[in-house]
Amino acid sequence: MKVLVDTCGWIEWLTDGELADKFAPYFVDLDSLIVSTSIQYELHKWICRERNEVLAREIIALTQQATVIPLTESLAILASEVSQKFKLSFADAIIYATASQEKVQLITADDHFEILPNVQYFSKKLDK
Image (tube, rainbow, N blue to C red; front, side, top):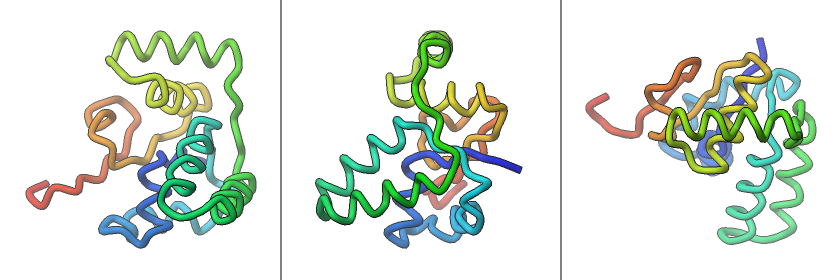
């Protein structure tokens, strides 16, 4: 079954963050992952800022082993609709719309998605 792991999940997994074990099972088979081009943008930007361009390109190459979904006109319209409905930022709306379009679950630790339909949310808060 395919899923879309949000940028925060990629970062948790790549940096062995506190939720890395929660996200790790989704990276066992990259063929089962959907990747939005917005996630590629966010990963590249974050890795360049935190590490370097060489590592960023290596991670983007890794994302390309998954099914990459580009931003199309129909996806942009869907993203606009979900942005308005759920009050999401541009990037979050594209990521959520991509998961919706592809009919896959969004896996995330981003609070913006916590209560949305078809989301597997992992909380960083100790009380959850």
